[in-house]
Amino acid sequence: MTSPQIKTALEAAILAPSPHNTQPWRFEVAEDTVELFLDESRILAIADPDGREARMSCGAALFNLRMSLRSRGVPVRVELLPDRDRPALLARVRIGGHLAVASDELVLCQAIPRRRTNRGPFREERVPGSVQKTLRQAALRERGRLILLDQPARYSAVATLLRLAEFSQRQDTDFQDELVQWVAGDPARLDGVPPLASGPPPVTEPLVLLREYGSNSQKAPREYEQEPLLGVLVTHGDTSYDHLLAGQAMQRVLLAATVCEVSASFLSAAVELPSSRASLRSLLGDGAYPQVVLRFGYGYQAPGTRRRPVDEVSTCPQNQT
Ligand SMILES: Cc1cc2nc3c(=O)[nH]c(=O)nc-3n(C[C@H](O)[C@H](O)[C@H](O)COP(=O)(O)O)c2cc1C
Image 1 (cartoon, helix red, strand yellow):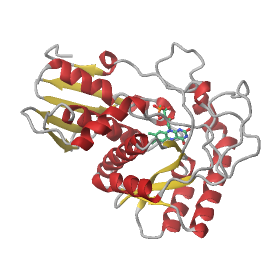
Image 2 (tube, protein in one colour):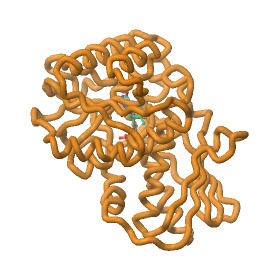
Image 3 (tube, helix red, strand yellow):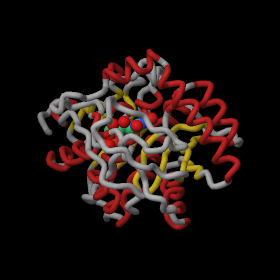
């Protein structure tokens, strides 16, 4: 394994999404191994006290790392939670040798730098059934399941739940105090969410409310879509292992959406508040655990967010990266 390949893979890994752009990951690189650690100091104490979303974010980073290596023909063997005495060690990735590149891996890898959370309005244009099928298959490939809400009764029950959960977080001073810490007002800041990444103010309040990072009043108000396509990614269990699977499935779905020119944003209030999450779980009805709620549609160019550089989040005993 050459060091430029590992460096490129780490550069892809850190483009993963994370709540409030906290980037809760750390990598240790050895000759033919990359170890992925949870950076516990970057877990959101209020929004994510159990670190579930932080582990999902690391799962997403792991997926990007895998795709980057695979797109260069490098076989990847991943062991999740390889050491029960070190729960922060989330994955050990062994690399080396050669295996032909699959075309889908190449296409997903190319989508990594183009994927963005898009909090802006979407056009009133339905996501076709064929694309919906692609998104569901992407989740299944990573042992997750994406439930797209296509029955009107269930859609409106979930939309109401999302709305109430978002209102509840807007009124929760602890949540808001934490969020403010992650508003990246200074353009030089390498984590957090810049106010520009919020959508413009709505002309009419939409059914589904999006999280706001700082004031977006400098943007002209816009009309949002009436009923975005909503999807809930679920897993069988709710252990750390499941969260890592969920993160990989989430990232495969987001990249598959990017490939199809479909934009996505997150609606996490309903899975961050324990009582809302329990209600959502019972609404979905088959005992699976909701891990992330996504809004899909056809949007306009979304601004990017920054990342801490690879050198800052990785150590390399043999001075490889
Ligand atoms: C598990 C998870 C939950 C998230 N929840 C929300 C959310 O509820 N609202 C929101 O606007 N963004 C949410 N995000 C998106 C992050 O804010 C976003 O990934 C981060 O700012 C980096 O920006 P990017 O996705 O454009 O690269 C979430 C991301 C992850 C991984």
